[in-house]
Image (cartoon, rainbow, N blue to C red; front, side, top):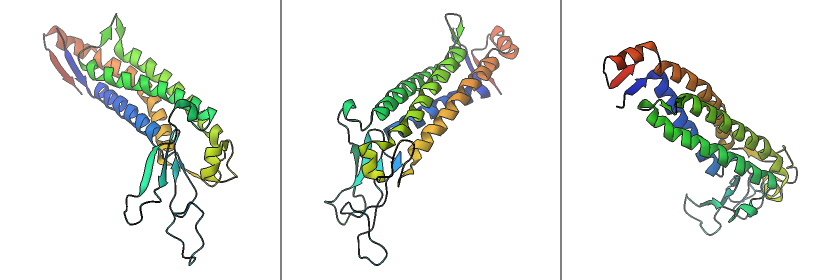
Length: 228
């Protein structure tokens, strides 16, 4: 019989696990890792004030995606084209970014699996006599290591030709040149930190769901157990 056990710590861990997985996935898919230097609609750097040039915009570049101004649209607000610049894995601009994509993809896959399993921990707390919380915490720690490797390698690819086109000739490994870092990069870093927090917090969730109070409730025959 399934005993549904809900505690504040286990619910918080479940919610954080889901949030972290989605945050890392959205960051990975985003084109807003690097924000390029200002350009005019024609693709050149805008002139100074009073130069009569069109309103400048900032193209963005991700690991495999980019956002640029659509030169064919003149009078619409949503005139930015976003999508993958690489049609295959081999077309990703840098070997370092290819490695980043692999490490992040593996880490995100593990996080998504943990997020899925975490939903069922309210009903199933162990499998093969192993605590699901402890196993998931270990997997989250491993995922965090993959994410760290990917984030360390990513700036090494700033010297590739694609990044130079967006960030100017001063761009090089670990130097973004005229570019600034976008929200996706910071989201990926924040998600990595939260991943390790989740890994540590999983132990607290395990303690909460295996406490003496929970065992007493189970022995009393209760199927739904809610504790603060």
